Image (cartoon, rainbow, N blue to C red; front, side):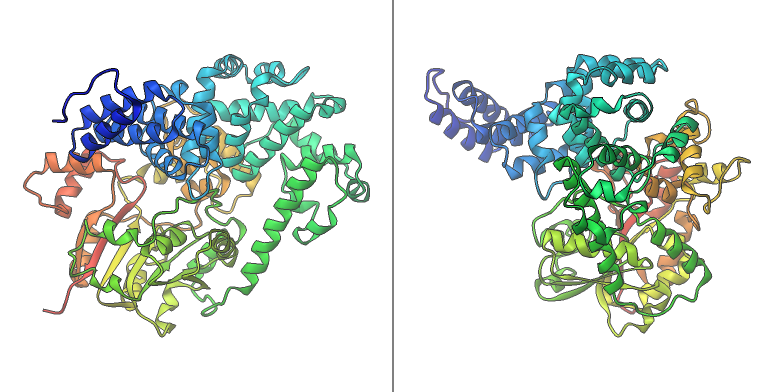
Length: 607
């Protein structure tokens, strides 16, 4: 117990006491001392941050978030505060988001090396409780009056809430994953197209909001459905390209409205970014050039990705076509961990002796890397000694990943277009193989897994992700419905079917998909519910494969609260738990593996 201190003590004395108490794990005393110190120095970002660390250890989640946002308010470039805030918001829902500091939230949205998606979602929740105009609009939207709410916010004047820097930053940095926000934003888009007079676009605030809305539709890959009137209006838009590039303001307005509904590439090729210098106004020009330049870079990178061999498997060809047309996922931000942090993470699953190979150069395969989010996070977390090869069926996806690797300065990863079925052509073996969300998109997942095993070194580690037959039962039900559009449907049909699911009453088949994070972008929605090919597996099948192939199960990657619940229910099932017990646990909670069975295993030495 720390010695008492006078209430009149100087700030530095309270800080010293707080730090001593924290080091001795006297968290309550540390909290009290930090609060006293802050009462004398409320604008001290570091003290807010240190108090937040204490509050997190005490499990006071809302208060932790409050002080992290205050730290960012007073020091916007406090990177560790932004990282902690993002990780906290990714795991926990804040019960009173209105208490968070809006300036701190905006600072976190602009931080580098931070996953901004959970911050963006929390920022929208904050705004819905602190901005009366928005609160009323969302309430009206819930009552089926979204268009009336949108007109009130936009038609004759630009409402103050639409001028909010936090709102625009959230739309630009994340994906809207709230049905009521989506309904309101689609109504705002509809009013912009069908009802707002051309002269209203002289309002800079309106233009700025429209550009933020454009960023959002790019982020969500045009997932929002449109009414027939909108489709007709878009079809009637005529844009003279020469006038647009010469600076015609009305052509730029038309382009903005068109781009809110249709890909920009249908009017301007990515390689034409340099020819758009004359577009006015300047904010529109900058947005267009940045978008086109990014797409051009991705396409050039895709053409340069080496290929292992032509695809011969029919299912592989079908899946490749899907991801070439719709790279998955088009992520917006990346959580950057400390280089080498993966060894500490893996210590939960493996003994120090098994991880000794990580003390020197080692090889990692990411099979089915897609657009590279997992591959880059792994490459960073494994550290500079890791030589990472990331493969995928889709060159377009890997082009996206290659550009992201360059943007984040990740130099220890290389990319290759390859089918898992052809990996035995590689003259290379790996200490670690990660393959998440890929094997169940193969004609024979077990054959694919065996191909991966052929590339695994003796004693190597594997991280596998497979669809659960229990958790995916709802998708099988949807596929059997008469109105199921099928994986080859066009984007408009996919959007319209998704809109039907969005409007289904709770408890009806498909309505539960709206709580899935994959529901809110078009490429992820296709992966969720309209995939070209997928199979589902059971824990019994996984257990049998592990046993037959000399692999040992070493644990699922799940939220700690889920792991605690399993341990409480099966106290005799020592970590990582018997798969037969996990089967019983899943039967009582059918959605527990909704995000796949994700688990670590290792190759056992020969008997």
